[in-house]
Amino acid sequence: MELSRFLRSKINYIDIILVIILAIIATFIPFLNHFYNISPDGIYHLSRFQSIADSLKNKEIPSILNFKYVSENSAVGVAINSLYPWLTGLIFIIPNLMFQNPMWGLAAGFLILNVITILTTRSLIRYISSDRLITYTGIIIYQFNNYHFIDMYSRSAFGESIAYAFLPLVVLGLLQINELKKSGFLVLGLSMGLLINTHIISFLFGIIMILFDILYMCVTKKIRLYVLIEMAKAGLVGLIIGSYSVYNLLSIYLSNKINKPFKAISMIDMNTMLKTLFNNDIASENSIGWNLGLPVTILLIYLLVASYKSSDKAVWKKWIVGAGVSYLLIFNWWPIQKLVNTPLGIIQFYGRFFVVISLLISVGYVLYLNHSQTNRRKLIFLNIIIIAFSLSAVYQNHYNYWTYRRSLTSSNYYSTLEKSYTFNDYLPITKPKENTSALKINTRSSGRRSLTNDSITLKFNTSKRQIISLPIVMYKGKNYDIWVNNNKSHSLSPNFLKIQATKGNNTVKMVSVESNNNKSLLLFSITSFFAFSMYLIFINHQSPHINKSNTYK
Image (cartoon, rainbow, N blue to C red; front, side, top):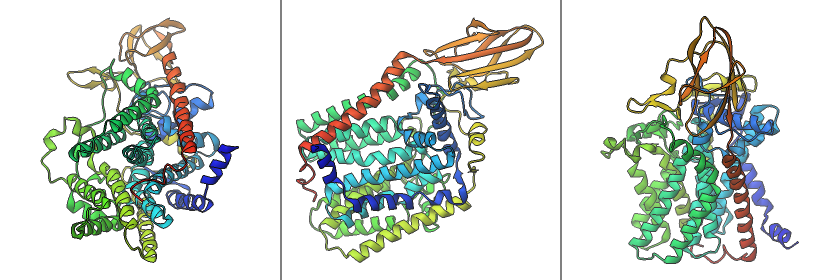
């Protein structure tokens, strides 16, 4: 009864209505006329989600290897589900299971994702402001800036879009730890665990935020042992929640040479960015022109000027100056292209830092409004302008942007996932010195094949007894059962299926055998997430004043 009263006291129906309305506004345009304008990135991600959904439909543990919905330029058995975390993809996978029409499931997934993004941002902003209008101004800046919609609807980068929803919790956790809140390490740990289970580069952004916070405390001589201990506890929580994803990733990388995603240092170009900014363009392929949208960019410039003119040492200035400096650092003015083969090349598109910059602007502007006389009509107008500009960009993208695009509908949904060219990342490399992937080996692809979520069966005819290489990749350290003409066999190569075929008709079947460690860690990660979440609710129940005594309000 006490818990139910606590929950009722926390529910505000005006906020519920506002969150749902904003989420619907952010979701409906990409599905106008019953199609979704999807990129190769989007097809790649939906394919891996669909393989998980099919496993769950069959009441099977999702395979860590991908047999169904594999790109035409990749190979059956590729370890996408091992090397690209999928657990938080349940945001899209569960609606796919609930709706017979996959497009309804996709739209529902985006709606849920937008609700989560708004709620996590609200949790952060409510910690620093108790004014509803100011709170939703901060939410709208983070939710409706153009970069967010580039990520979601232009690139259709599902992993990054989901991670975008959890990064505000990283900032909230750091703020709470710095203010000695009991719940701080749990918020930070949960957010980092979710990022591990979502997108590795975004997880690295979370690490950068933590390291910068530690560096700032060292420079200002405000470092405290308690804070470092709480951050260490948060790291432990994150690793526990992410143990399934970490195990799968390391089990492949430590035992195999992998064809990794390309490295690049693609930074923002001023001329290109100004063109896309004034055209309100969110074209995803034009990574050197990614932007936050004209209203948010003008707001940042205004706040930078205001911080320069202001003589006081207000907290908001640090956030806005941080946003401005970060913005300048991602332009292509700096001679760092030669560092492409260093860890800097992993980030690829430096426009990705707009996720951090938009967070800094959102928090900084809310802190600015907390201590300024606000014309509420002008503030409402600003919110409307930000939403209008971003929705206009999404509308243009939906109907007019078709570079490398396909119109995804309910009738071509599955065929698009099955017969598209996307990426051949994560294939095993057969000749490390030459960086030759198994896909480059001369393999035989003729014949008939049938696929399940964890197996492939091939039927083909040969004119003589011979050794045949088949277009199916394998990984050291993973278990496979192989049958050739109903006889238990093995592959003559560790990286791709190579067998002795007989003259005439041949049937070859390969099954990926799931390890017990994988099953146990999947259950452990999911259970630990819910356990830590319940513990966080318990702590907040025990200390309902936790968000009322901070220095930011």
